[in-house]
Image (cartoon, rainbow, N blue to C red; front, top):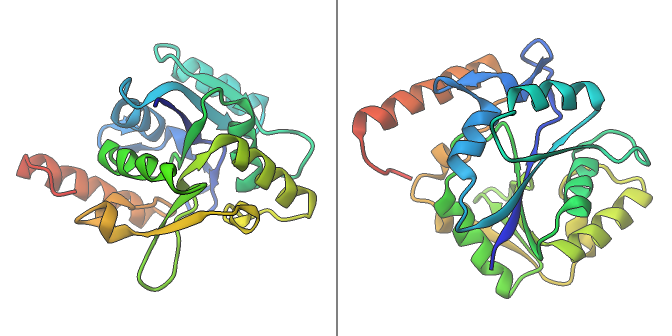
Length: 216
C-alpha cells in the first residue's frame, strides 16, 4: 500500500543564525533536495507534501523545487506555530491512508528505515523510533492518517504543541527501538540543529561515499 510522504520544512535554525533549514547545504545539495532525492520512492509513496510556516517560505521553496513534483502547503492558521501544527497540516492535506512524517533536518534517513516503519502500521496506529535512554524521534514517524488527524487536532485544541502529543490520544502507538530499524542509528538519525551538526553530516557523507557500501 502506497503512502504519503510529509516533509516538515518550516523551521528556522535558531542555533545557525536563523537560516531557513530546507536551503542549508550538506552533501553538495540543499536539505530539501536531499530529502526528495533520497526518500521519494514511487514504490512507497503516491505523493509528497512539503509543509512550511508561511507564504514567504512557500514562495521560496516553489522556486527552489520547480523541477520536483511536490505539493507545498502552509501551516493551518487556526493554531500557533509549532511542530505539531505542521504535522497536523501535513496529515490533513494528505490523500493516502498511511503517512510518513520526517523533518527536513534529518538528511540521512533511508528508504529502508521508512519501509520498515510503514510495515508496522499493520499492528500500530503510529510507529516512533525510541533510543535506549527513552528519548523518542517523533519527527521521524509513521501514522495511520485519519487517526493522526484526529489525535493531533485534539492535542492542539488542548494547547499542546509538541510533536509527540498525538501519541497520548492513540489506542496503539508503537515505540520501536532504533536498533531494530538500523544497524547504525546514530548515523541514520543525525539531526541538524547547529553548525557542528552540519559539519558532522558533511563528514558522514564523505565517509559513506568513500566506503561505497551500505552501513545503515
